Length: 398
Image 1 (tube, rainbow, N blue to C red):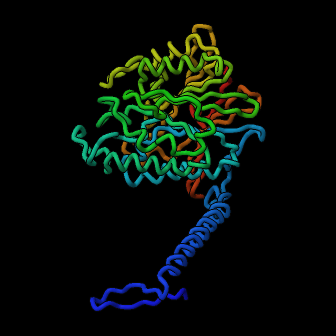
Image 2 (tube, rainbow, N blue to C red):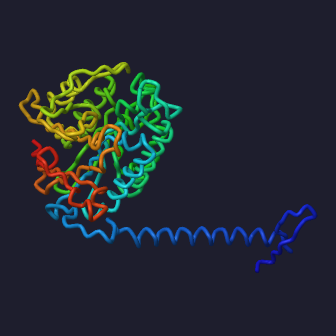
């Protein structure tokens, strides 16, 4: 068709011969460009054709996710993914959650996705065997855990901005023996192109490198105005806290509503929710929750909400309390961490995520808890909403 014929050499190898090598090269390059164009065109068509499929078509949901108020917008809060990433069989569940989020961007008017840290079970294990534990706690080495979590968030790249924080399991070899982390390798600043429009500040990590471990993102949101979301590393160093404090009180951001995302603030058990005073991790230097709140919240006028993960129990994945600062202002502290639902070595968290609906009054946030995993089948969809008082409630931000 293009002046090409197939011949055989004496050694039996097949090769392509052209009557005009120069012409053939140009034709091949031309066809390569045509092929790439067709591939891109097909990809765009495929994405647009199926973009509105937000649930299996054969599953007729009795109570599908929807905004309570048509003028609201929402943010999606994802708990610690570590127990999804540590087993190969549960990794796809977390990707289902991010794919579901991308598909519901318009339905829920989603502006942002947040994740509470512990992106992996172990940061630096070269093998799947953990000599510190009597029972197997993972069946994949750390590199494959990081790849799994990064792949899940790739579902959101170019679709929605997301803000991550690092947890204790994201450092060291097994768990926070030091501040070495592979976070920046798998989540470089260039990963999500939408960060170009909202990422406004970063601070150096413990090695003096600018990464997203400590980062600030600015949004102009309907009826809420300017919002600054600050992500802080696990057990933040003095330098990181000082950076966040300076940012919050700066002339540029002092009138913004600030949301703080950091891994460890609250502990929860069956009976109570409380601020963490101290923990026993080896990494140095460090500050734990009580010290962090004292320095960032006590005299703050614009810190409105604190989100965290870290703690959790099989019988309790959420909790919230108010922190009353030195000025008498109440700041909600919200913990969300379903990782042990179904057991510490279960499926990762039953697919639970938190829908945070920001109401048009500019001060009320409606919290609801939903599982796309349970909603993916008519046999289990009745389990897809968790409506207990820890998981369905409202906050009024002062």
